[in-house]
Image 1 (tube, rainbow, N blue to C red):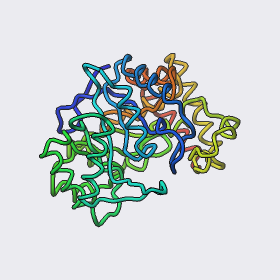
Image 2 (image 1 turned 135 degrees about the vertical axis):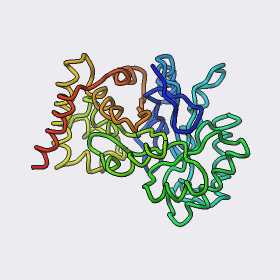
Image 3 (image 1 turned 90 degrees about the horizontal axis):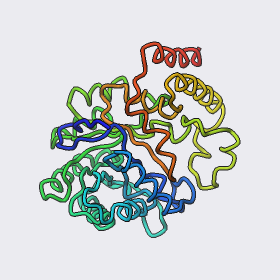
Image 4 (image 1 turned 45 degrees about the vertical axis):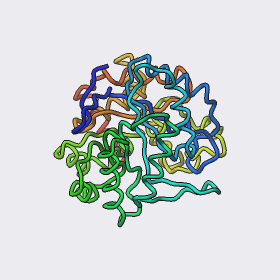
Length: 319
């Protein structure tokens, strides 16, 4: 896969990165259900063998477990991929999740992530959520200091709006923005993505397949069989009235994919990559074989007719 520079950094990343949210396993607020670590490691290896050169995780995924699994998968590699992780979401002894952008908290998180990942420096360290808003300046100043100290190589933000990015830029450059972006979540198109492009901030989109909804594998029957602790069971995207519309969209993506010999998932991800502001898209996989149905998105170019067909679908759905 061809690579592109990520914002103002010296990181050249593939259009698709491996997302490690789901491999955090069960037992926390935003879990995807139980997960076999051996499957997770095999899925990571498969992605890397296919050419993917970056992994995106976070301390909160599985309350540290995702980072530990990533470390196990990369152990002994002479040329490991870039590893991106995040801070600002913390948890207590009762496994209750909170938010902190205090300098001391971010430093503790960074040290813990370095230990779990088994690395000397984190390639890209990101603020996961801009909460509490009033502490953004303190948090970002701490991130900049961590970079100066060599504990992290580059710093980025996730889920920030334009005003919040402006406040951060007054302190230190932003290498990247990680927003939610997919066919069914396009809130960042009007202001946030254009601003990132203008400021030469790299964009790595998360949930380009809407957390599995646009893969073509999700059905109403499968939804009913999701584990009790899978957060998707209670999300509006996976419930009526939005569910039926989203599954109709998948049928359109499948039809478009058929013309290219590609899966609906590849069409969904290719659509995200079609936006020039987007540098890469994060794709999760929980077991071997899954990532293969998405990698073709890196080389898939939707034509104007297909893009217009997708836009027409939403215009009709909104009428």
